[in-house]
Length: 175
Image 1 (cartoon, rainbow, N blue to C red):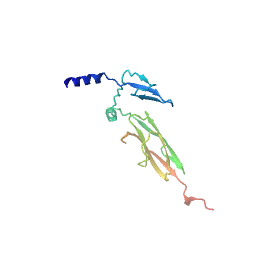
Image 2: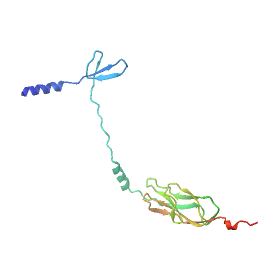
Image 3: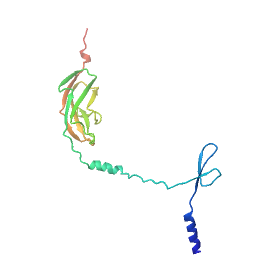
């Protein structure tokens, strides 16, 4: 019994699986472990291997970026249009243009937030211009601020006062 088990182990260690290749009448290639009349033996040298690349979890990358200290630029923010104390007669829209120096820091995700009369106009954006529409007559105060990705104000422009004048229905010419 002892030797029987040893013999079985030796026989199985020398056994190799043979692979045969045949082509059927439709031209399809078939691989099998059964030898047929027109089959040719395929010699397989080594088993293919693959080493997977090391994957760094994205959470670790985000933590590294958060831990990296990116210096806050010393921004200078100026509203170039509209001009301070400018008056508009019946405007359909007013283009607002801001000059930011140095340019917005993309890795820090700095953006510009426009505020009209203390209320945000949309969300923070990377564009240095916007268009105001549907403004009521009267005086308005405009401010542009550079904010970081959390919405914290880094630097604000000086406020710009501008005026909207609209024709009154009561002041139409009478014939």
